[in-house]
Image 1 (tube, rainbow, N blue to C red):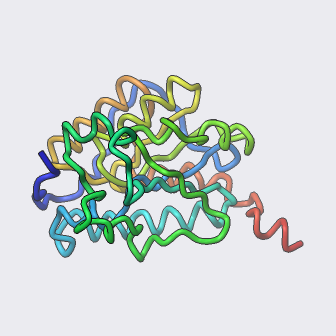
Image 2 (image 1 turned 90 degrees about the vertical axis):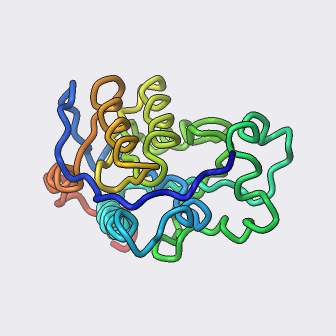
Length: 225
């Protein structure tokens, strides 16, 4: 019933065959770091692929986004969830990190600790939009694109991409800044986003798209001047 121990696998880096030609724009995008909590990563051998590559990739992308003034959002499940709030998740996954022995796992991994100015959303369901004000926050900052990273690609990352599309936010799944239950599941998420609701891009493709906006001063630079 709980999340099983997950196998190591090589992080995919191959570009996807996307249905649409959207590209992230630093003036329109926000970054989502999805469920990168100790509990969820503890299901892997964190010394083996894809986890070291995953963390390094998200760190590099997060830092680039900060340089460009792109807002950074996190999701994190709370360590205490009343049964009525957790509801159907209990049937699929049991108590998860709400079990007393796992509550210390609610921390976001140290390498990705949120910084001042970042937003941490309380995560209640697969989609980051459910029971959160993510859509309103994006709208308030004139953001209609969401770059999605983290775990697990075929569950919460995919659900968030689907809901972003249904709320007129262009989702971008970062192919090599996500991890999943298996390489098969990971590829399924990449393909589904590419075919049905958004664009799946490698980090190189994301960085190349953002490079055209490199001349835009970051929020910090603007405030400093």
